Length: 604
Image (cartoon, rainbow, N blue to C red; front, side, top):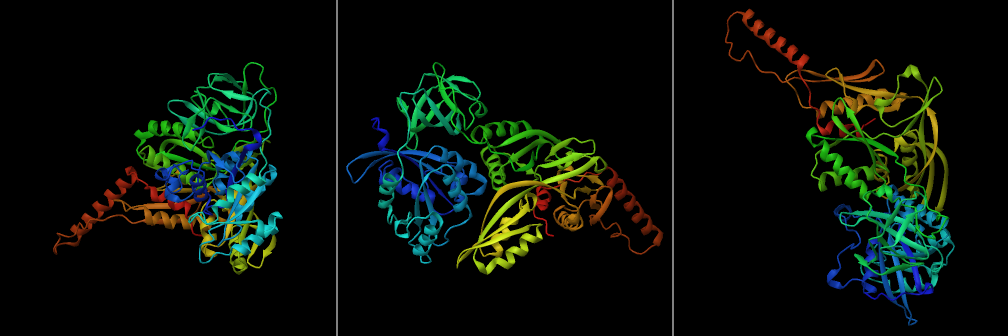
């Protein structure tokens, strides 16, 4: 690799933003091929998606950076720093990181689906950070593509001319040669002073077993080199960098990173918490005093307990979470104990997809067999003595007599859908306690529905039902609104008259009977028959609102009685009945993972 230093006017830092599955990673592949960053024999589909789960699910989970060298038609050679970002709403914090390191963004829109929820959400993030937008319509090779219509949608959205919108097919390589000239022409070169004190923004990080925390940097001012005494401005923590380099797309060491450039530094630190995203690196001697404007750390929205099926794996689960957190700073966890599931951890996630990804990574990468409890949100509980507590675990909810008020988080959601599905989607949302706000007709093919809705109502199968009711056409974006008081209570499940704390949920009182009955029905289906009758009950406070019984397995004790006195048969049946009663007193019911999953799929 050439180590020539490029002047600022020939550097471009940009990212790719889009709705999920609109072709960001495939477009990145074509740009890597076009610039010769990777040879043909090194190329694979979605080369920047290194994680097995990313390839399997076809989504980008973690942002990736790569440096390319581009020989422009004007004869100049440019340094292009590209960051590929996720598209799912759960990972919008990754997009925010990437935007902080860029001057521009490629906005990719699917020619068959048009502008969707995350298209707008990510676009607004980019506009808030004053980035230059280069609009691109992708997948123009598909039979159902509407490139000219989608280009007009973009014209109405961002004010560009429809004929300026690039029309490409990343899969077939059609029109790809127009992308990089547009990047060079439209995106401004970075600003920075190489002679000023060092200021470098950390926009991402991962953990390497040999080099410690690898911090992804955008150098704003000054120069950063290896073996240089450095400091984090916000925490005051000092360290000496082991290695400075760039991504091509693998890590490649170089001598130094200068103002305006994007790369990495191996810090040697043993925990990501010591090297927080959004912090500013400077030199220990004569360093900068003022930190760069970073961004808020990700805030967990969904909480759930994760327990090993075999409690002997508790220590292995702890070590796995520690290692996973090194590469995913948004994951938070703390130990907790359940009467039903023994020892485990209470974990905080950005959303349900994030929770699913974390659980799958723990099971696959660390060979663990896990049980996840019902997801919950964080409630504000005001007590009668005036104190306010944050509660994310139903078991921590105080007695009702001590509670003055419970407040739950509400979200502002926007649903983008063809007009044909307005009625069924409004019915679905209002059924989930949603409040209608407004409707905007974007064009003849698409409307935007806005609602306020409790976060707890969209946690589980809201997105699945949205796709089912709209035949896959609708998309969803949401942001945290406010906390509101509600008539909430704890629904407790008892199996064999013993409360199972891991199955408790906090719900609205009006839904207690319906959800309790649904939970009991599903639990009856998944708990296998025992040698004794197992009652399953759902209770609110001390009142049982629903009940079902799992019938016992019975041995035919009369099989060998042929005739004879009826008293002999009655004696055998009474003995069997007494045995069942004794087993019920001392018996223990093992609850399978399916029972905990049943809580996630309640059918009102």
